[in-house]
Length: 200
Image (cartoon, rainbow, N blue to C red; front, side, top):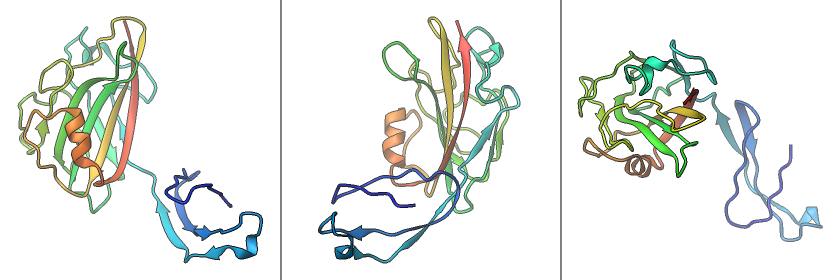
């Protein structure tokens, strides 16, 4: 499979599936004259499956139970994680709604969750620091806790995103999503997500 790019700086390619690929970069002085291309040593790249995120409360793409929304108990749903990289040091969970009227709306920010965590039960504590040492960030409702789906109208999508990091974040509790995203830049080993919907 050959992929050409007309840039001398950076390029990005999405691999079609998991597995091992050999990436070879060739510097071409004259695109019309392939023999003038200068081969650069190939690099094997391993593309993993990513983190598998599931919930016993709803399936991917399905409706989120009222219990986990502002129309119910407004508690966090149970979540399970698989394929966490062995070298991971911590996990981050972000739940947001890209269908909000003005901008993506943040419902939950949780970081410095131990990388050994394979599941969270429903109704995770709203304490700033959990027993596991994980920290709650601030959501767009202004609270340091999970705040469930509460769309003003129509059907919205809610993404529960899980990131495995090669570090723990040097942030106090109450950090915003933007602060967490900036802090984990360059430290993401793998990621995955689960999407559920809810209608007004």
